[in-house]
Image 1 (tube, each protein chain N blue to C red):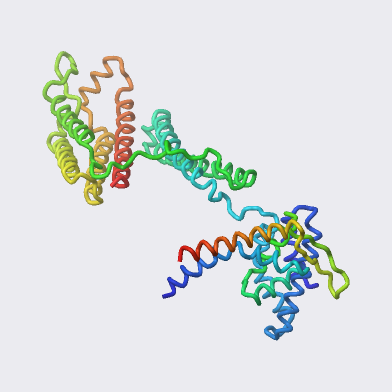
Image 2 (image 1 turned 120 degrees about the horizontal axis):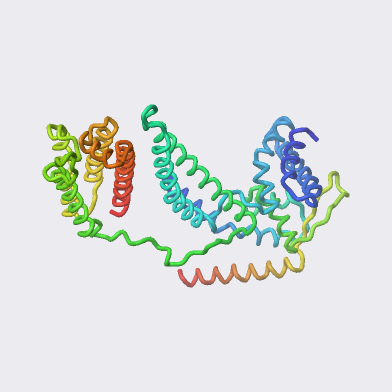
Length: 109
Length: 320
């Protein structure tokens, strides 16, 4: 039933869409650069496309949720992102909402 | 750094604002290198060139990547504006295009030298004008909406209220008594007019009553025309009793319409419709261009009515 697979995949994608932001804000409490974050997210089950994640980090930086600085000490210069205080607040709010949604869905079931 | 990455990074940052370019350029190069190294370390790819190529494929179209950085839309008209765009284009095309077509056709039929060139150029020219108008209407409307999409993203312009809802298609009574009666009365009036102009014409030439239509047509074409009218009347009654137009009744209707329209146009264009005495009476009465004027106005009338009938048929089918 490939058709059903497609339907499920579509719904899963919809459900997970916003979770990348939560995962990025949570991971980057330890500073990290683009590709390393992509890898660690993939290891923990968040399959994000590279061309989605890199622009997303920039947008979060622009919104003040991440701070960024260049690290030139290693072999090649890398831009390290870190969750800001504002980012921590947003992360806490998003997590609270996530738990509230989970509780509501548990109540329904 | 190889040229493929150079070209990819250049194509991406070209889309960005000046103050972002250098930073994104630097980060993107580093990221591509990271991804290439990871592929080589994993041993999945043998050569650096292949790995680089695969990484760029994974990152995808630079326009799409750049749109991620800038937040610019990847569509011409997005979901916030699409319904308004579609409604406006539909209304404009439905109103402006037929108007341009009819006006151009009438003007051309009167200004062209029909005697030498025939009506072909007038019909062709007006159809072309209508087509050009349609292209312009769609293009300029879309351009305005594309600009709106980029200047105020995610918002509609006119909004929507329930007042904009189209009329209900009428459910089971898709064919109303009113339109049926109107169709039947029109057909009877046409049929009676054809008989009446023969038996008691008001036109006089040298004191004698002359028929409007060529009496020779009674030996073939006028009975055919009356038979077609009768068939149309039967069809209207059938559709009314069925309460709706079906594809079959509509198709028969189209054939009958085209038969009537085609017959009249052919008689007009070959100067066989009107009686010579009738035309002479008009000329003697001071209307020197009567023959041409009647031919042109009748031609336009027949074409407009036939086309309009087809539009109505399409509307009825959609209203089923």
